[in-house]
Length: 477
Image 1 (cartoon, rainbow, N blue to C red):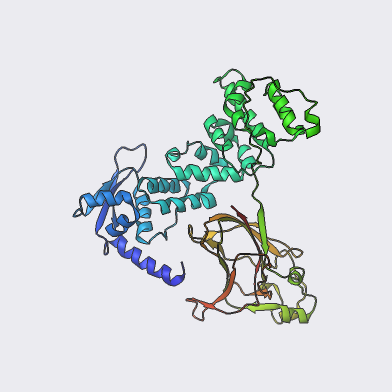
Image 2: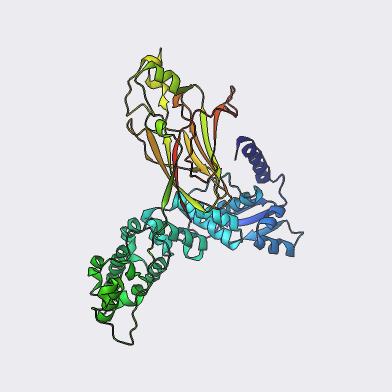
């Protein structure tokens, strides 16, 4: 939200919380501690019209008794109810930040129970982009984290997180404690980011061994064949990757695999499997991971190899723009198809404070370790989530003076996407206009803003000669 809209929303929310514009009180219980019996009642002010418009649950509940000005809700603490009310009152926005993973899971459960789909989508984005981490991902995916097993969007987010980081997740200690049904669920995901099916085979065997050790079944082979083999795409394996599998499959299955992999002329020399033959593994020959990351460059070839030339006074004066005030760079576009924004490369500006205070143009040498200014704010806003912070992956150096920022934001077709980078300190910016690749079919828009004289708002500079964006990477569906 821009500053004007944000200011108006803050005033509206303040009026609601004070009860000035409320026509409903929601009474909920806050349990101080699980060890202490009893709970305190908390009153949350709300707007009937907004709740009814956003939620079928509240519509049915409030239409039964339209004159009632107070209702009770159990199962959620007041902080979660306040977020639900705020989301409906601000027409799908949250000004209050979701604090942590537990609160996000509870908010997702509230969205599911109250049938507020847009809030559930927001929780899914927050989980993927902010709260899900490797060290607890299996507890969530396995349904062992609080009441996450009951929440569809939480399980879908966990599944998507694991799908994108399969190997890293399976290296976590919690993997061997999951239920076999969780692994089966993962194996039935159509697209997994794995280089080879052999990785899934390896960790399926690891899990089968752990189940056997716990005494649930006697033989690892029996567990592996019953639970996991029917969902593994062995026909995507190369012949040299089949070694670990030979002890887990029958001779007829090995013959079937060999015939499937052999060139046409060699098949006639191989024995046929006995009839009738029922093999257990999947006959799907499609690789798990087929999505390719596409990178779009925004700088011309000349600029790309001449980002921070400082060898003479002419280059300083003609290739750098000095800003004394705060600057904001905005790259925006409307997604022409479903995509996931994965990475952004940005040319960092040079700190003015790093140079000669009397005449920066005479200071031609600089320390590549300290000369670059990091942004005070780096965010991406989509139709599902506002001002999601980007994660700095690498800062860059003098040879490659662009920083890399990672994200994982799903974007629906037709959604507006806005990426913002703000710099507070006086800096030198490379004068390099946005120059999209010719083949790109995404309509990008670039804008540059500076703070007004009284620092109360942003002013459009209307400058198309200065650009910090180096490239954007995405995966399409």
